[in-house]
Length: 579
Image (cartoon, rainbow, N blue to C red; front, side):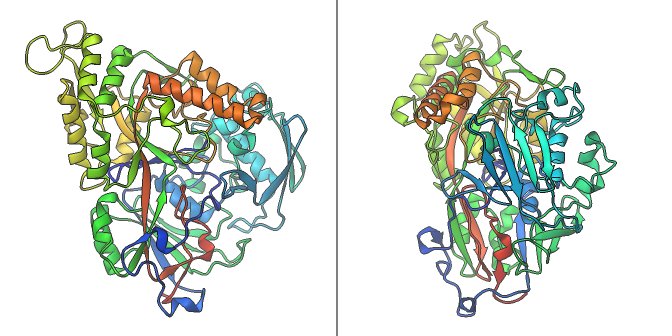
């Protein structure tokens, strides 16, 4: 499962998307387009693709500027990466991993994979792509000095553990057979090895002399990043904009556009920016939907979002030395408290009022579009039920002892819960207040941490670093095509932000990818049992399986979207006016 942090307010967004080529494509058809001319191109557009011109892609908050997939953490940088680089494998329309730049042969025991990559593919600096670049990227992620969150995507390789612990100088399971052939041997057969294997190369020569620990702040990542994609970075204004120019030697052919301008915008002005032509495409905030529908110079492409919005509980912290979670916060130990907070939350009204109906209720971390999603009749759907919430709180000993309308804890002490969320939309504050009021209605004193919502980067820094003031937090995770929750839900996953796990959780996640799981029915049953566990234990409150709106200027043609991205094959984008 591939993940990315995402924004909330229009809610939040997340994690990094991998292998995005061609999954469940949605084109500009009348069935999924709203507003304007219904997506119909003008007469000039019918003439077909032409070279020249530029487009502006809008994004609502300052980006971090980690322009290397191995280090990038959120969609803010990922959108730039989707223009400038790409993985060696891709996702097909049925959400399975397919050959791309690389194809492979798999051994009978499912442990050894022999990959062959296409020849003649060039990096932006002119170097030819070889399998040494792929091997190098895996070694970076497996390095003891690596501080990113991608280790789960290489840990299955034989010898990666010893290399990661500094006990070996090489990863024994990787062997270069020739410049275009790489053999990788895994520690065991796992049904989703190909789905989870790291597939982004790093130019080995370009990083020569840079230690892994220094890479995130290096010029190669921050100032002069390169890739193998259709556009190359020509200028970076930190946190504000990125200019990308056409890469004429792109292996799939010369892109139509001359350039792409990635620009930080004020999302509250999204409709006016589209109306004036200042931006051509973005993943728009939901609170701009009604205004955007009135514009004639855009079309709106809707798509399901492979993601989930949640409210997480903090059960402990991350032990960086031991590389594991430590569940040392007893505040939310009683699951009746967590379940009561679930029942108390009017999620349906939150979606209808603050997300303009662009989403569906969900009860587990696996979205409805997945083959592994458990039917609702096999789990508790936690309907809005303040009465049930009150009963559970009474059973757990959370009672109002002093008559002020707010509950004390089982020891009779004042009980307050701090809530963290993100800014980003005109409704963010009102939405947070509605949540807090839902909980107050059942006697729980839940207050904004610090008295205000945080911007996205500040929010995730506090959550990731386990700031002691963070107790519950409203986030969104974007997901990959495979339902394996590794990377987010195990005890040794840095992205396990609630810092929750259990023996049963670890067992089910592990068994769902082992040899027996090559039987799809068996694997589905493992994920059903895992979802039942999560549904009962409630380490998170799940809010919605969301729908995305993608406004696109009528001058911009060739845009497709899917559940993972609205930047698909940008080398085929073109503009009707040549500007």
